[in-house]
Amino acid sequence: MAGKSTFTGKQKAAVLLIAMGTEVSANVFKHMTEQEIEEMTLAISNARNVNTDLTKQVIEEFYQTALAQEYISQGGIGYAKQILEKALGAQQANDVIQKLTSTLQVRPFDFMRKSDPQQILNFLQNEHPQTIALVLSYLTPEQAAAVLSSLPIESQADVARRIAQMDRTSPEIISQVERILEKKISSSSVNQDYTQTGGIGSIVNVLNGVDRTTEKNILDQLEEADPDLAEEIKKRMFVFEDIIILDDRAIQRVIRESENEDLLLAMRTASDEVKDLLFRNMSERMAASFKEEMEYMGPVRLHDVEEAQTRVVNTIRKLEDAGEIVIARGQGDDVIV
Image (cartoon, rainbow, N blue to C red):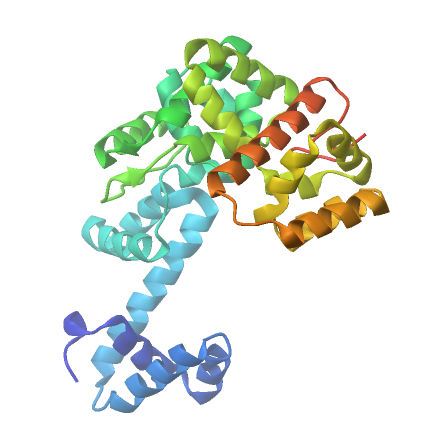
């Protein structure tokens, strides 16, 4: 068999499974897909004349990688690198970390995703808004929402705007920011490719997790600074299909406040779940009338359907702004009243 340096990942796995024996290997196979089992069976059948030294090298590499993964889970990549450098030397430690991070596809600021939002706030609150926006765009929406809600009111909209307008960030900038924050939290992460960061979708996920007061403050300020951006964010924050998160009382109120023609058009492309929900909250006569009209409705432009859905969504947001319905947000126990 070829030397270890020319091994593929499957060949190394085959050598490892052979070394572990049939019983252990059989347990490993239980966690594989059918395709993976077929590929590994083929690799094992082709693994002939594997000498002892080669087997030891593969086992040692597996052991080092497993240790590195454990260290990363305990304290991040920076911590893992420090431990491995002491045990293996700088070059070998770097090789292990590179192989592992390429496999795990470790994202920048991974170490912060293990931190409490209040801790993250303490680390970031004195940083430049662009730095805060960069870090928040890599956190989970729940973490980012908690941090954004805790920032000073005057800076919330600025950070939200920067997240929304962020596109691609070079690995050099990401690494530089991480090195600065490394003084507060031991971590280091380098991504070889330009990384998709932030954007409208990112800030929408964050704002969907903040409280209504924070959301309104941010959107109000954005409307003054950048009306088009604010409008685009609002369009994506609550779409027509999200109507399923409202309770029956709220749905009935939306039906009463919406034009029948808008509802009829809006339901044209709606899921069966949404249609059933709306029909269930209409009077029998209204539901029967809608079903009949939908059955005989001719072709309509998708643009007209989307505009009708937007008008219904705007009605929902107006009712929420007036405090007449509540849209559940985040991970709390909000209910519709």
